[in-house]
Length: 165
Image 1 (cartoon, rainbow, N blue to C red):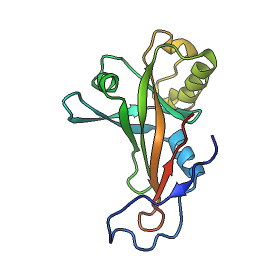
Image 2: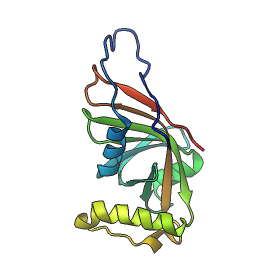
Image 3: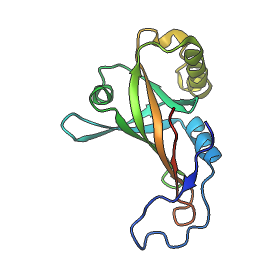
Image 4: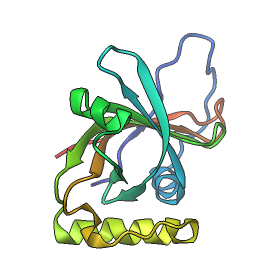
């Protein structure tokens, strides 16, 4: 993927008067790669929101997380795939809006890349999956559509609209 264009998010009059810069896409990708906890927001079938912290990895420009398809968030995704993912910081902000889906069995190369990324981040926390961990399902993929980011709200609020193939 080519680097997405950085634009200003739309704000009501009076919010941001003189933004000076943009957050680089490389910073967003680094934050998505390094984050330990990702807040996943889904929508219940009755329209009520649901948020949960998840361990996840950023691989090949997508966010992956795993777990039972019986969880509330997995059932929400099955009914309504639109999701938001927010990293933990309120000052070094990355908010991803995207579409999620369950993956029945990832391709071997992708499964290995995901497993390696998980092991790099979570082995010390007690989680080190192997590439065959998702052979029977339990893996979810989020394709980012837009990303809002800032490191200083009044100086560099940035929006990226990602091209999807």
